[in-house]
Length: 113
Image 1 (tube, rainbow, N blue to C red):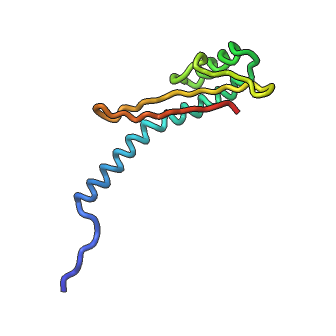
Image 2 (image 1 turned 30 degrees about the vertical axis):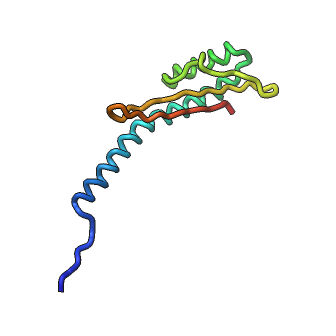
Image 3 (image 1 turned 60 degrees about the horizontal axis):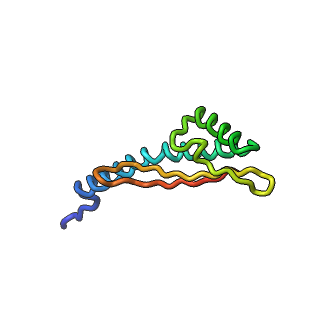
């Protein structure tokens, strides 16, 4: 009797390995943008403690210098009021070059709490 072999072929292993490697490279490039987004959200919440628009932008710029935020600055913030509370909102895009003409576009939006 012949034993039937089971498992994955070498080509299958190469394909799965390539997909995992590609996914890992993309994840390694996206992760820093997520960390920066969290820092921006934290800085916007801290900046909402200001009373005037220039003060809010100044507080955000100081927090951005500490957390090394490069994607957005105080002038890019939208400052408004919700009742008697100051709200700070922001929106920005990040592009990650994948290769050739291909880019991954990440759109981040947030608001102070």
